[in-house]
Length: 102
Image (cartoon, rainbow, N blue to C red):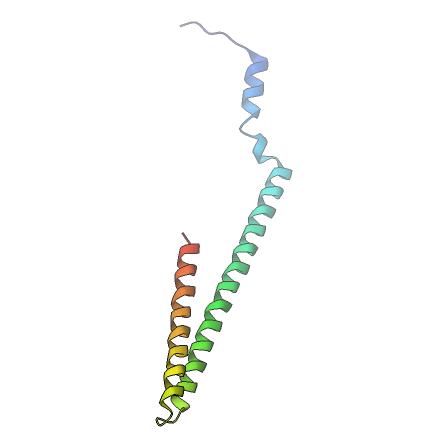
C-alpha cells in the first residue's frame, strides 16, 4: 500500500471540524439558544393567559346562569347558550395549544 502525503490539504481538513467551536461561534450559539428559550417562555405564557381567560369567562357565564331565577326561562336559555359557548372556547384554546406544540 502506497501513501501520498499532501500536508497543506491535511492541515486544512484538520481545521474544518474545529471551526464551529471557535469561542465567538460558541458565544453566538449560546445567545441564540437563550433567545429561543425566552421566546418559548413567552409563547407558553401567552397560552397560559389565553387558557386562564377562557376558563374565567366560562366560570363567569356559569355564575350568571346559576343566579337567574327559574321563572325567567328565556334569560336562562340565553345564559345557558353563552355558558356553553364559553366552554367550547376553552376546548378550542386547548386544541390550538396542543396543535401548536406539534
